[in-house]
Image (tube, rainbow, N blue to C red; front, side):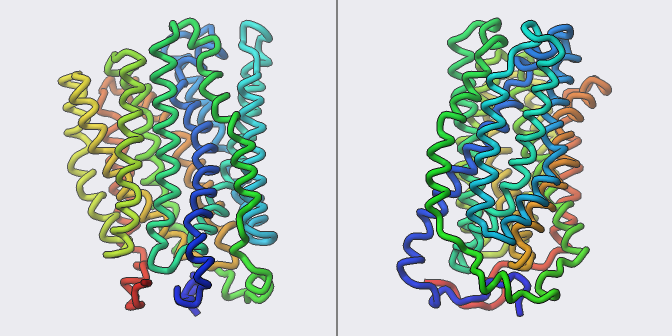
Amino acid sequence: MDPSGLEEPATARPMKERHSSLRNVAAVGLGNALEFYDFITFSFFAIQIGHCFFPESRTSHGLLYALATFGVGFLTRPLGGVVIGMYGDRVGRKPAMVLSFALMGGSILGLVLTPSYAQIGVAAPILLVTFRLLQGFALGGEVGPSTAFLVEAAPPHRRGFYVSLQSMTQDLAVLAAGVIGFVLTALLAPAALDAWGWRVALLIGTAVVPVGLYLRHRLPETLLDAERLASTPAERHVPVRVIVLAILLLMAAIIYIYGLDYITTYAQDSLRMSTALAFGATVVIGLCAVVADPLSGLLSDRIGRRPVVLGAVVILVLLLVPAYMAMTELRNVSVVYAVIAILALLQAFLTAPALVAITESLPKAVRSGALATIYAVATSLFGGSTQFAIKALTDLTGSPLAPAWYMTLAVLIGGIAMTLMHETAPIKKGLAPDH
């Protein structure tokens, strides 16, 4: 038996189920986008949040404290991955997705309502860290159940496309955060941004939490009772080799994603661009990634996961350092936007096929918990430290090229891991395409 547990032919699926599955994917994707919007908005407003909660240091130290607080949200991701991910294997994908979404909404609302340091003193950063820990716990349990649902809801030869839609909704969240940040920075004075502008950006995300909860409650369940009860120990075993390669591959994708998202802070801190223009770069990232995500999924369904990921790896290893050199030497807005657009397009071909390859490699009986735990461990080790490490390396070396070298090394390691993974795309296994 295939360990993925997904070799059921697409023709065996009821026609009504196959026609409704894209609507279900949209419901999952919307909830996923809302969670990632709130989480990533924190990093976009790192400078303003640093001013609000760490007012004694309005220089690089204040920014480092804010970035460290952003990283704190990754500490509880493994716990959330284990608890909520295993809950998704034991009870079902839908209850796990509803739980993670509700926790995320509550933690964001708490963060928005936390008074500043000037109002309640040291209690402010303590509350900030507490809500970030809860936020990380919720998000740690999001990826496993939602990605498992998408793979299980998709026809076999469309898994790459369906999972890429999840990446697309996450990038839509980046786009929305960038647009809202751009508008707020264009309309508000710096003092207003520090005091309450960043709260408005986060509050917009919490306003749509009821919509996400409603949509997720209406989802069907893809993990049937018979499948959950009939699995044998062999069908629940995840090889150590798969775990290690998955963590390394996710490490590359996560460092690249958060390294690229750091451009909002990087453009202000290293390139000395205005806040509004820096958020414009974020809008460019979101637009390009949204366009490229479904294309990467379709291409991985057509030619396989490995060729798509390795092609992106080769290009990025050759391109990243020259791209950052162009930005730092020319410091022209058009050049920065053009470079970021190319790097954002390549992000899609690195990340989406990698995620579906890892998901397909895991047994269905433990897919939610295993993927959630692997993803959470990788993000805790590498995602939470990426932006802090980039800023610290930039300060230590005095070189604005530090982000490029850091991301290049990560991508190279991820490429090596991908070469050692087995191809999981059905088209490469000789299975007939779904029509």
